[in-house]
Length: 440
Image (cartoon, rainbow, N blue to C red):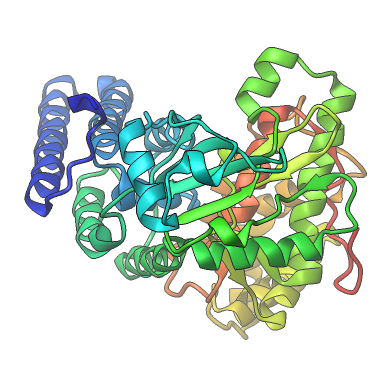
């Protein structure tokens, strides 16, 4: 194993990497300030963009070295609307399924210690070289004794014990990021606490296996979806064995197969219907919608993997989220804003002057939302950037958020992940939310 592939295990070494990144990022803030003094407003925009890009590069470089909880927490944070700057989200997008794998020796050692025997005795074939690697672990191809294709996910050693210390590092690194949006410190702290709680669950592969079985049963009659079977006899808290799904991730699928518009629409609608069914029928969502967890299969099915991050919702939360969207579609801003009041996103207003001002503030956001969700088919191929514009407009209209309702960050994460995929595909899909009592 080369130096570049090693994951720094000691807290001192990990803290050293994070501290160095923080200092370098802080230097970029100083450089930007000096340039602003010299150039004035003339070069402000270009200087700020250059600063953001360089800080994103510095932080991403450090997180790629740290891997583990630090990288995973940052990945989850980048899915939160308007939390991290755009350059940081772009950089972290590369890390979802492109982290360099660790050595074959470590993978064999993990299998032996957890499953009690050498992999060659457990499986008819086991590839010691990982074919996919991410922040918390890596995945190996294997073949069962009966010829079944398997995927063996192995958690990196030390991941669980580094959770608290790595979250402290993330909080420190977030302080040096150029976060210029309207978000209260308590909202950011709440988001980071939610991420830490969710990661505590995600490192338990037995819990992930249980989630996978649950979603597999819930979508058992969906011919368009493939959720892999779990093999309990080869699963522990740090080893997960599932059926292996063959296909391509979205970047490779788009680049290598150059799919037709019809095929883009086909997969786009599957992604949309999966999200809506989870939200409106099951009240439980796959809350880690990074591109590496969706596999485009040659037979037209969409494979969905990695159910380590799952969130359930109260029926009242789903009703209010549904009511807010319908209010926009029906041009009934009062209904949409009343739903936000019930959710706690807006303070309760009763005077007509305050309500009138609020309606005007959300008028443009309503135009965006009604166009996206009210259309029979929304065409992402000809409306590139409209979703991002609408999200920014909504954030501006909402203003400073004093309270984040329970479950909202996970809802936003799943929703934003779906919209990013649809935009990347250039799909044409029906985004109208179904009635609460129905689902496709």
